[in-house]
Image (cartoon, rainbow, N blue to C red; front, side, top):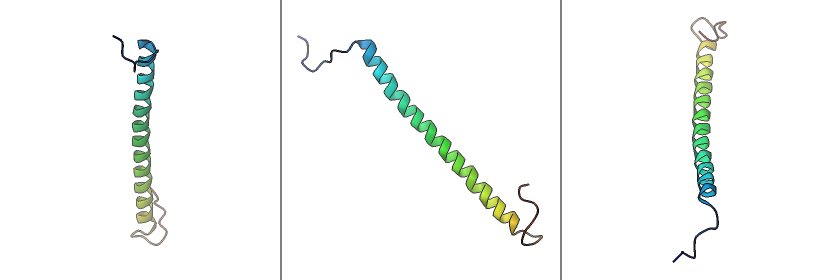
Length: 66
């Protein structure tokens, strides 16, 4: 006896929906990792620039990034 809760979609259509759902989650995780790496690099670049601007050789050092 068939269940009353089954859909009228074919198995191919169900597989396509599941793969779209999964790929959206994988994309979201990848985008999140990308943002975290970008923000970390930006943070450390700013910190390093501040340390070299107010460095040992004066208030405004000419060595921005070494």
